[in-house]
Length: 166
Image (cartoon, rainbow, N blue to C red; front, side, top):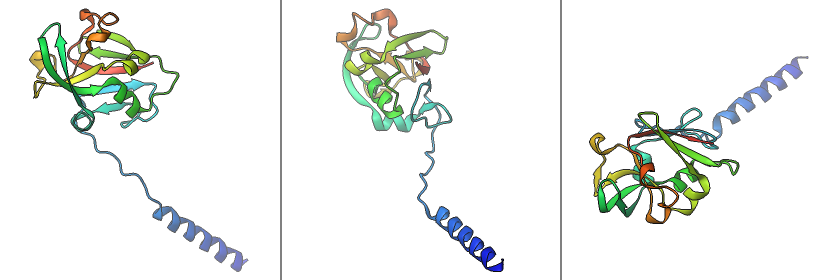
């Protein structure tokens, strides 16, 4: 009986030692949320949500010159393309839309297929300057010219805070 106990103890100690040696992924430290996405997400980074913080925007942003129906033509916007966000969140194939929602609760649905086809952008900078609250920041949406028939001027939104993938 003593021999069995020693063997069991040795196996438990070895198992504990091996568990402690496995590589664990370091938790990503997130900054304050500029926007939070919920819903059907395969790779959340904060509980069941995906938080877009300043570091995410810094790492994933692209620039595009866009004619904004409200702020003027030829503005150099910089932000995250929704298709890149969907990829980072590992959105399942079954998802059909992402609804972006502003501080006033109003929102619009964007078809995932449209987001994959067009450069629809979550804008955080305009002409090299972070969007301030007085111009719809910190995040607003911008649509490229080729998406304007589907997403007319009235669907451009400012003060975006959340989104929901369905």
